[in-house]
Image (cartoon, rainbow, N blue to C red; front, side, top):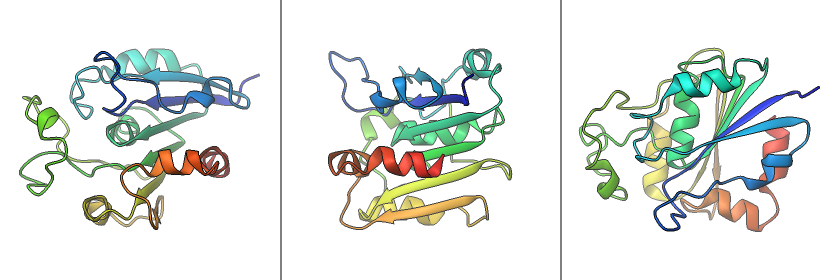
Length: 184
C-alpha cells in the first residue's frame, strides 16, 4: 500500500516549445509514494489553478505532500489552503508577485503582467501543514523569505552560495533527494 502522494507543481522555467517541463522527475518512482505533476499552464502563481481537479485526484490519499520550485513552490504552499496537506516543500519561493506588495520584484515581469485577476496576492499559511522553505542567498529571494511569517510549523532554510536555482544546485551536488527524504 502506498504511503501517500507527492504533488509536484512546475515552475515557469524549462519551457521547451512553450511547454513547462516536470521538475523533480525522480519522484515518479520514488519510495512508496504515488506522484502527480501539476502544470500551471498560464504561469499564474496559483491564480488560475483548478484546485477541484487536483483534490479529485488526491482525495483517496491520507498523506498528501506538495513540492515545488519557484512559482511551483508558491503553488505547493497555496494548495494547502484548499486541502489538508501534511507537508509542503518549497524551493526558491516568492512571498508574492503582486506589484503592490513587492514593487521591487522584476524578475518575472513578463508573467506578472499577464495576471489580470489576483485571487492570491501573497502566500497564505495554515497552522496544520508543516512547511519547509528552502531559499538561496540571492538578495531578492531573501527579501521574499523575510516576508514569510515566523510560525512553529514554518521551517526556513537558506543555502549559502546558492541563488534562485537552489534546487538545481542541490540536485547537481546529489543533495536534493536526500533533503526531500529527510523532510518527508
